[in-house]
Image (cartoon, rainbow, N blue to C red; front, side):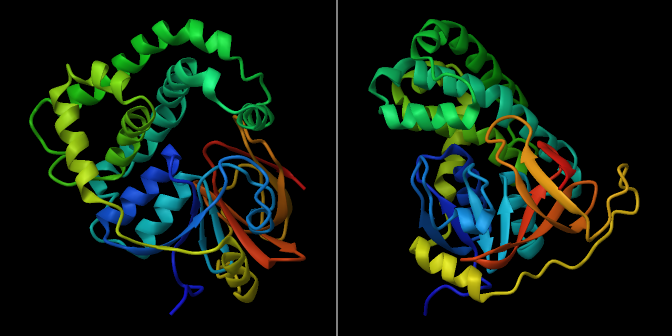
Length: 311
């Protein structure tokens, strides 16, 4: 049997650190899922009709429901497969908030350290794509000069993880891996994958992080089956989006279902995605949009890290 509109379909590429969070979540929950390999640069002709232009990685598809950004992807996986819990009450606020650290300042230290080291070997097409994504030059020389400083910053932040684990517990907040571990692990995995010698040089002093890293790596990624991008697009176009209409009664901007809005990331990849608001809360917004290839699609975003303006 092939993939259905009820299956988890992850649009990703294997070297994407954000995607590793989701793959590890699948492993923790022992989920069977479909893998759509996308290029690490544009164009992505079968994915853009589903997202409306969102170009960060990864994207989770369940039928005609499209989830953009790992914040809401992981929240939706938790909602649909609640056990084992990634968000027990003990970390319900702290674990999601960790993403603002790991996905921004810690990740930027990783990026600068990695590309400051290997930047000369990076293809020109990749550099051009990342310049378009970030709106800033891909300045290899500046990254090279920053490597010593980024080693300091990366080491300091890895040290925080080690301190959190220093009481001997197997995971950051206890005996089971939670969303906090997925966030914390991402940059360790990224540096280890890209610069194994540099990662070992820094992490050799952090025995708790090294043991924790091994425990997480051993979990695996669940059961993965490859799927073509055209087939995923067909699944989306043949399905109906499922979000219920939900009004955020306390929306500080007075938005209601039916409003035309535009959603865009607030840091980079600020491609605007326009649609009709159908569901929102303090944590999320869902818009409906029409595409000539994908049909009617619901696109889901977190509120944190995104701007919402009238359409």
